[in-house]
Image (tube, rainbow, N blue to C red; front, side, top):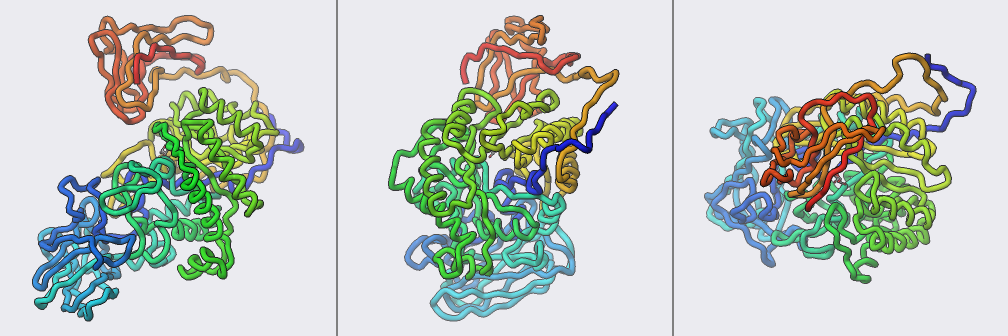
Length: 613
Ligand code: AHR
């Protein structure tokens, strides 16, 4: 029997309760949400995507790349030298360039030099996909040339070729092909089907641009120069302005990103779908398992200033430096930024917090109306989590970002997680969570858990599932909310759950109680186990006990470990010397007892001796 008490004052649920978290992981941006069809359009890509690196990832051409004073722009350094009679062909992303018969495609190219150019869209066998386009370039200085192609048939495996006539030498850069049909028909816009799937969620906010992408983007440091030899951390100023003047970079997830989808586009998209923009800025401490703090006060101050400039870019008047850039890019009105998160999954609590308070003090002094969100580390529990909560509580942080990825059993057994949270402490932004698979049961566990979030909406003010997008040819992390290939996309069952909740956010909860037979915990199957983030972690003496302390099963692996297996299908666990088990993958794994167990309570504890990792 469910008893409702409509007269009682339930908690208010903010309209922005449920949102999305976009990160460029799983090739979510280029070749995904960002509608550009030419891969490596500016010849900047680092070796990350191409072992025999020449800056020519995705290109076939006898031309050669150069990085010298003849470049198009300081941040777009490399260009292609092409002689008359030579051509360049781009293979696009994955299977190729996806075009739809009858649709229009806007071509553009930057060229220095004079020549007749012929632009063709064709399949891998050379069969035409559109009538050719001819363009004549003139003069020694860089200039942009444009034209339109209409596709005559549909394919997801097209190619784009530009052939130079004449005999002169050309410098070529920023070769682009965009579908005319983008989300809201925005130029430099977003792939319609993907953006529409996100919009259909009706999200209350968009958290961007990461994730680990933000605070650990650099393998060289926070201030490395961005050119095709060196990657650097994600810095918002690299991502704004005319696209031909934007940097490219190798991201945390190990591949190149063009920054064509940059901060302006994130703000515009948030506005287009009626969601609150919620940027995350790096705190100069490398979270996400890389425990390194940058001790450079001048650099820290520069990043703090960058964050103030970001707020000016979003909200400042058109007469301000950064407000003017926003206006020049096409949006004189402010974007209405209200929240900024500093840091992501921070592993060094005290080092992080020492920097966080400086960010917060500077932001509050200049923009007291902005909520500065603090961090609680990479997990739902543990010493780092506890210490960060303690520091945030002591400092009176308004809101903190929690993350966790767990089994469905965890979500089912932790519905009451927030019931006991301090109502006078920081509010919670659940910036990342997911039950660890893309099966219906995972989604049901998430749905059940979300009822607990809503019941505690006075504490949990915002929540977003993660990650949002996965290119099926480049899956680095699963589960994911929306999957896609070059021309199709589909939502997971978790997508349907999120959509259901986001499109039906109530004004307040109605207190209720539940009584009757059959309410005892139901059996679960699938086992219980261990999870880890590390590459090569070793465990011995695994023991599973019931809440009453009774040993359910134990294994010292002396007789092998056949009874243990990876739960999610990603792990590679093996018995080493018959004495312990070892994982040899960097992905997040869960190891479980192979034989399904039947449990009447979800609070089993798993203990093991961790040998290393
Ligand atoms: O959502 C994928 C990753 O998970 C994010 O980048 C990171 O914050 C978390 O570890």
